[in-house]
Image 1: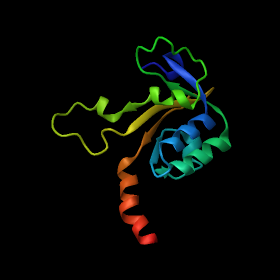
Image 2: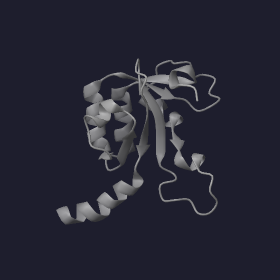
Image 3: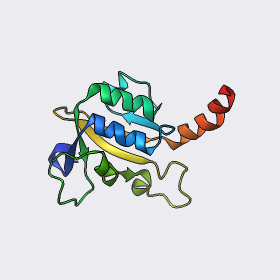
Image 4: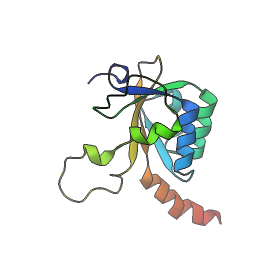
Length: 141
């Protein structure tokens, strides 16, 4: 499998990604798999507001994998308004027959920090968000 920087990709500032995450809803939870930088700074899964705050503190460039066949993706910079076009879904990678799991429509991105060899996954975690709303929030009232 080719690396992100060798295939179709865009560059985005981590602060722009943070803004997009907040626009999706601060009650959503996200997971990171494979990034030693973020996993060393936060406990995952975590809510969007915590992840967004850390992405703003880091204030670094990221490379985000573009959808296959995107003829425009040649490493140019994008802002938060373009992030939705980079979304993949777990359902697109599932091959089993039968009903889809609860998390099948969760969004995901393949990313790497510009200049880093570590590629990683940023994935929505709807199951954790639902559990938090149902189990933790009612007890806090």
